Length: 233
Image 1: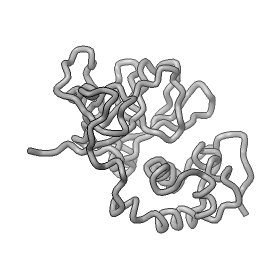
Image 2 (image 1 turned 30 degrees about the vertical axis):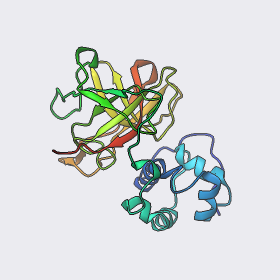
Image 3 (image 1 turned 45 degrees about the horizontal axis):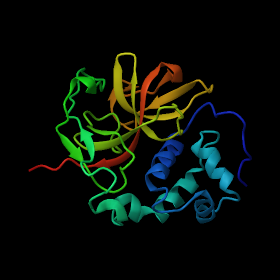
């Protein structure tokens, strides 16, 4: 029997729950159309069970995660290509969104130079990014495997700072600029900046440990809308 809805966030989000959230956000709208369809496929009694997990209000049962990964293994492995993978011209902006070649400026922490000091090196133009504002490369490994070093991401500025828990964002706060997966914090005015790379360690500690950010301290919030590999020529 599935646990009922819980009003508060769970104290410890288990690794399998984080893995489910990551894969869920990668596959939603592609492998499944909504929580109702996914709940039926995984044997949940209600779509609200999926919602509770995605919002970090309850952990997923390891067996449910196993079923999830088995059912959608072809999508996860990339054997099933998505319809939007073919590059076609778009009509909204004939030139496309500006691409800024910005390098990391600090060791160990992915920090980016101010894009206002940079000139675009080109433009990105393909279906699905019509509402995006600009594109940046990824430097470093804190968000691996979701974001690989050297890939490009199309970003949409979120002006009202409304955060969808579990999604990946480019954030600017204080003197820092980085990519992080933002999870719901213990209070509405804070979020947990989570790095997908949980395998690299420094001693007995995570190299890219999660940390808390006040939403009010975020100066720029951009949703990662699309990811494209950087081709070598």
